[in-house]
Amino acid sequence: MEPVLNAGVYAYACVPHGTALGHIPVVATMQEREGLTVIVTEAQALQLGLTVLFRCAWITLNVHSDLNAVGLTAAFAAALGDAGISCNVVAGAYHDHLFVPVESAAQALNALTNLQNQGAIG
Image 1 (spheres, rainbow, N blue to C red):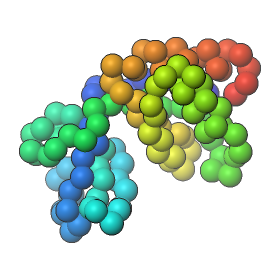
Image 2 (tube, one colour; image 1 turned 45 degrees about the horizontal axis):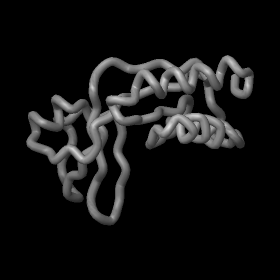
Image 3 (cartoon, rainbow, N blue to C red; image 1 turned 90 degrees about the vertical axis):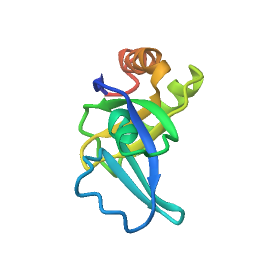
Image 4 (cartoon, rainbow, N blue to C red; image 1 turned 120 degrees about the vertical axis):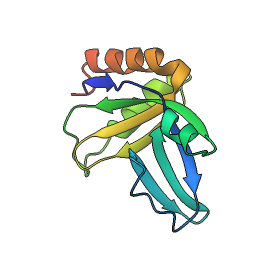
């Protein structure tokens, strides 16, 4: 899996539909009925006056994951769940990105590394 903790603290926030995001460097977005969920650095969220819905650390799984693969998400979700860590997953075209509570970052990285060392996941 090759989990890597990205530097910084990130934040989930929601902006109204139609909000221009050209000036906001976002990590990810998701269109929902209630608005546009954005993941940005916490500093950016605070600077823009956004309500932070979730403070998180960002872990990237550097293994090239196939979008059709079966079992990877279940395996890391189980490992994190067993460790009592919540996780929000964003799948990119090439990698999975995990957003965990910022205070659980080291524990999450340890759980993922242990899972990898067990040989259960590439």
